[in-house]
Image (cartoon, rainbow, N blue to C red; front, side, top):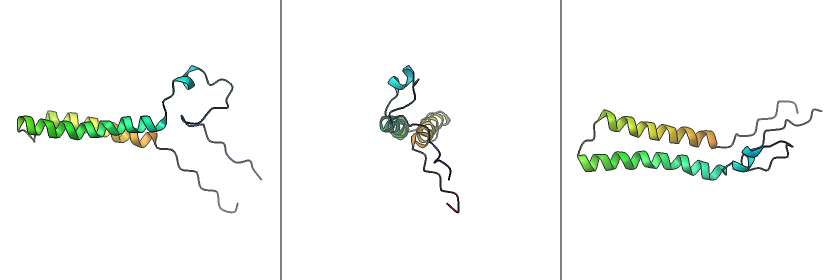
Length: 93
């Protein structure tokens, strides 16, 4: 019987590695990071609505560029911060 595979520690988990270094002390909790990226998505929607209501221009390439950049960085960051699901056990164990 093989030993269970060890997964790497997440940012919110304490590290039992002997040389975690100064980067461990600077890590931000995952929940705060997730909501930081979620705020980029909210900022994209607010920016688009503010620009459209302020200037009366809803179809503009510059507005699309800013909105899509903020939104996609926010969605990608939220997706990357989510915890990895546990790997399924191989059949027969």
